[in-house]
Image (tube, rainbow, N blue to C red; front, side, top):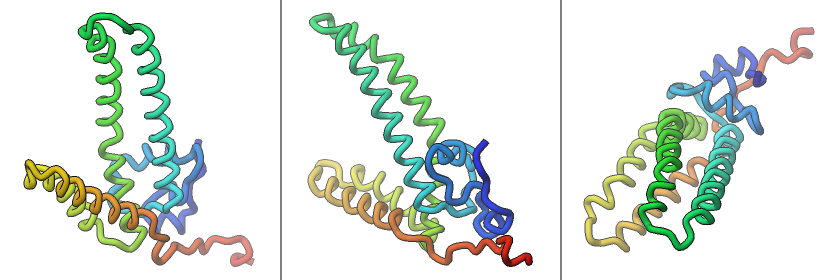
Length: 173
């Protein structure tokens, strides 16, 4: 089981795995499945992002390897049929991590000192810009890129007002 944060840290951050990294980031991510009220450190956020990216790359590399070698020179319907299962698995994985992904991003924004509403506005804007600017693909792409960069900068910001662990053993003596 993953090491949890001290009671003092939990009470200040609302996150039992505050600061989790490495392999602990995976159970921390799923343990905070719908925790939109706490905070998450850069370490916790970016370790999960790394694991998600690695899993996605490995999954699709395997799929492309198997499908690519097995369907060379064959009917395109065979390719579609071969990709149907992996696409469904990817969709299920995407649905499984949708809420915890939103939750960790909201917690990361809060930990960086940015109101969670900014995250919502940025995500809604990123979704609406291509719809509103239908036909203006270059402008739409540039605005969406700018929104992504703003989101990235906020996610990189350091913790604002870091929690203090007042349960140190030297303080109890």
